[in-house]
Length: 227
Picture (cartoon, rainbow, N blue to C red):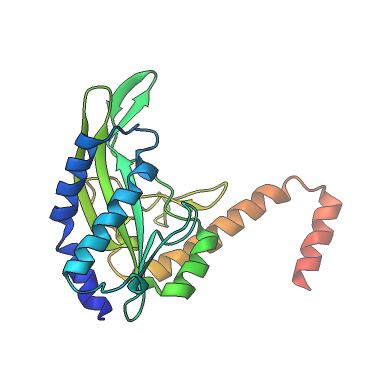
């Protein structure tokens, strides 16, 4: 089956997914803290249904659902080549100082820099897509705002340095703002930014830790690096 046709078919099916999720939250009780993981089973069920109707899935051997929440990707379509679909979600509301407020960015974990090497090697940059659910859960309302399906890099944000937005302590990439246009429009642009971001973070962390090494030991360490 065609990988390219499957991508386009899924993108054209987002309205079906939105309606399905809107109905789902009426029939089931969800907690805003755990909605992102609880909704995944409902999403994958709908993906199977949609892809079966489009004849992209004919048997259970044509797809794979992650066994655990930590496995990547959440859903694999065994097209030619394989298509990896990762389910992400972001709440447009957050609690700040005990009060619900509107937020422009959910700051999701979009995968760590180190792990992206393996993901890209396994599937290829052009075959990893995100299904991103924008929802609004607070003390007054629970609603599905939108669903978007696109290449993963379309959802990533940039930081002040113009590099991929990430959390320094673990390298977790961060998303763009909900209403912002994607600052990354191509695989070539992502690959360029990815390489620069990895180098920038590595240098920044190294400089910080070097300060903690006594001067004599630091000089010896830097000398060893040269060799």
